[in-house]
Length: 284
Ligand SMILES: [Fe+2]
Ligand SMILES: [Fe+2]
Image 1: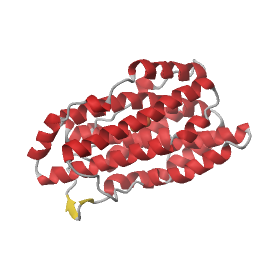
Image 2: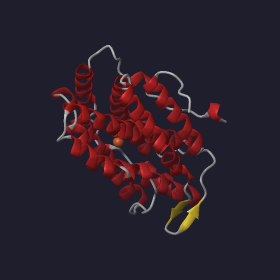
Image 3: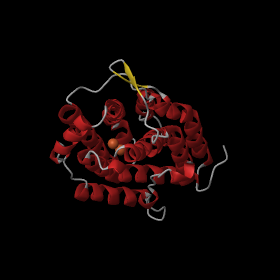
Image 4: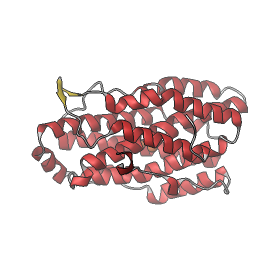
């Protein structure tokens, strides 16, 4: 079954280690300024509203649950992202990371609009994402590191990049795009949502590309390599919970479509990211 999964990769977007980090950061900053200019308010959602009315209740319930997960995640990372910018160690790095901050708010805006205009309702409460919840502590640790020496700042940044770009964006969000494609995109439904995802994925290509390149570089230091590996392993059970939870909307449980295959997709994406960072399949 695993072979059939259409796994998203960002291999093409991981910048080379031959350039300096500042060169890479500036290049991505310029790309964001020039090309990252899509407007979440300009995507036509008219057909999506019709498609939503036409699908059966089970798929309706699943889509509301699925999009709540994305809205919660985009909003949470947008609200908490400032320490990642502050720990950037140059003007170039902070400039690039500042484009990521506004992009996360654009992704949030897109899903807020989707709930309002397509679903005609608020998001649901209680879609569990422990990796997201752990960002609260991460933010505190990163802010505390700002007062410390260079070594501690770098260690905090390594953990921050692993948690956010390496796991939330690199594993969870990337898996979400594949799940969407398998359940809805491949059926030609929801063209507005498909366009939103396509735009968001372009932005995420820069975010994850920068993050994974940083982690690849920093993993050359054995202490950092241990930190990165440790966090991936610690979070794996929390990552897997995402698609194991029952899909409950307004007190009613809906079946998970068979195409989701959440656990298989997440596990494959997890392995893929470790390989991106450490360059070879890593024994577990
Ligand atoms: Fe995002
Ligand atoms: Fe992102």
